[in-house]
Structure formats: C-alpha cells, structure tokens
Length: 144
Image (tube, rainbow, N blue to C red; front, side, top):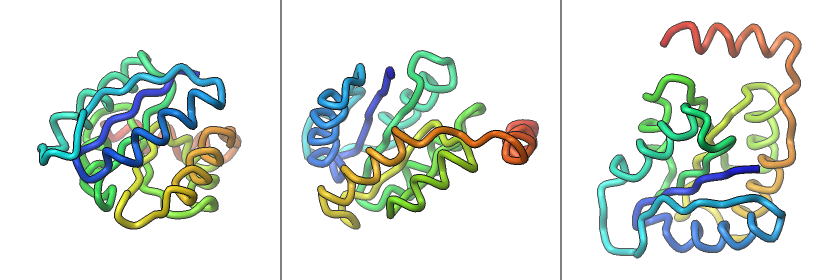
C-alpha cells in the first residue's frame, strides 16, 4: 500500500520509527517532512499530505504531532479526508472498520513507541466494514 507520513517537530522521532516499521510490513512509504526536531508550523506539512491522500496519490496517510489534535484538525479540513486521532488499538480498529479513516493522527507525547507501532499495525490491517457504515461515510462526505 502507498502510505505518506508527515509530522511536526514534536512527532518527528516516532515518524522516523514508523517509516521503518511500515517498510518492514511491505508498504511503499513516502516521508513528507518535517526533517528534524527543530520547531515548525505543522499545517505546512500536514495539509500537503491530506491533499495528496484526497487526490489518491497515497492510499493512506499518517500524521504525527505532540498530541495529534492539531494535525487531525488540519487534515480534516481537506475534502475527501477522514482523519482519526487514535490512542489505542481499539480506536484504530474502529476508525478503519466503521469510519473508513484514510489518515491516522498520533500524538508522540501521549504514546510509547510500542503503542504507536501497535496502533499503526492495527489501523493498516483493518478493512472497512461497509454496510450501514458506508451510508454514514456518504453523509460525512456530502457536507463538503
């Protein structure tokens, strides 16, 4: 699967580790920045990723920050994006199975590396259930 990752300075370290994990899982991974722990404004990195996912250049995206909140907010401003801030494997499973989330947001300051890896694995491996959930996704996307 084609996956893009982007972070601000507060999510940089976990992003780098997740890139290696995703490649080991067999995914084609693109890093859209940032490139260090030097302070940056996260919308400059998150919005281009969200737009690329919405255009279909990547099947999925993962964004990271200190809490992941701002990153999810920026991503969700882009039509066609359903970004979910996840904090557990169960929240990641539901984000995919019920909401067909195409972008995952994580907070480096709130998760251990092991937790982040487990969340990403679950999110990447969980299919969308469709059915009654598809109707709700259509309703979400209709408001854009």
